[in-house]
Image (cartoon, rainbow, N blue to C red; front, side, top):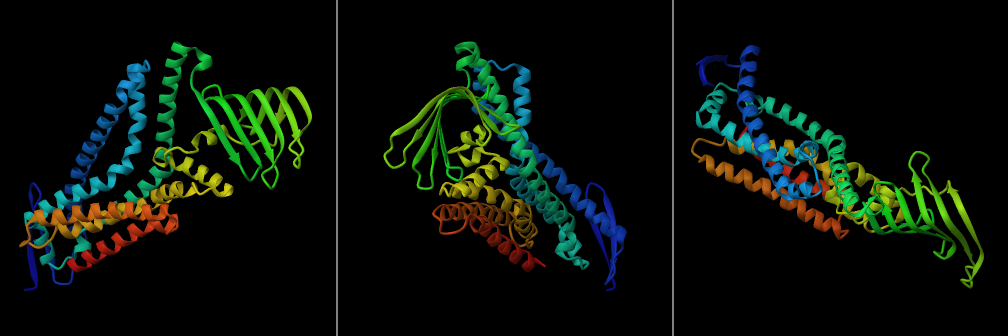
Length: 397
């Protein structure tokens, strides 16, 4: 038989005629629009639902705190609007999986995929539009991780800190609001050890500052102490006020040449207090930019703490391929043979999806123990699952 007539149901009936060995561009575009239309409608609904659930969870965790800090309705709306984009990279792979399983499963149960493949169209040909959207989603993931999510995380943190500052200023006074106590920072490359008794996140002023100048053998050769200090971000310099300078004899440890000063500029002190405050914070609470900034410092410092931040940093980069991996997992099981129950395909694909996260956690654990480099630990789970997805997809062709 040289020709086959396939009837596709998509709300209305349309006929696509394909001759053996040849097809028409119009028919192919019609199939692409039909499949993409069914999938993208479901994807939009799933994205909205999952983002809404995460937003409700965030409101459950922080809504009471915002009210206690005296936030107005506008403050609350702005905070959650700024916070919302940071969840997109979390829910996008899951939304892709659920929407593909549902929409392609519906087409399969209606025998539409069977009819399309009966006229000689390959599985990749039928799903090429989905792969294109998946590649675009990978680009979107990269854009979000590098630009949108860092802005969302840092701006939402700034809004919340500002609300806390206003509340503390009303209750305790402006001088006591927003203070971080006992800040320490060891700048090994620069040979400076910092201790700040109190630092105001809102005025940018440090109180009770001590800076020890160390030699190559980590012996103290000089110490600067000041009642108050301020960092100038544009010039990247510090100004100390009401302080003293003390020299030490490195052999005996005795004090030599003590002197006092009222105001003193330190053009060679470039330490950023914002970086000081990032030390020992949970990597998951830091943005992509902050992770890179902290890694650069810890690498130059030779600190072993760099591993946990590097794992998070390279993990965010590797996750950009997650969309294509999810598509490669979902399609074969969504359009499996008619003799196989749809529940079986859905269960297998969800199982592989969670296996991906188990592999990620295992690789992070191994990487944290320095058995793998952070780059390898981040990419191994993606490489394994990409091979698995490719194997299942090739089997379905």
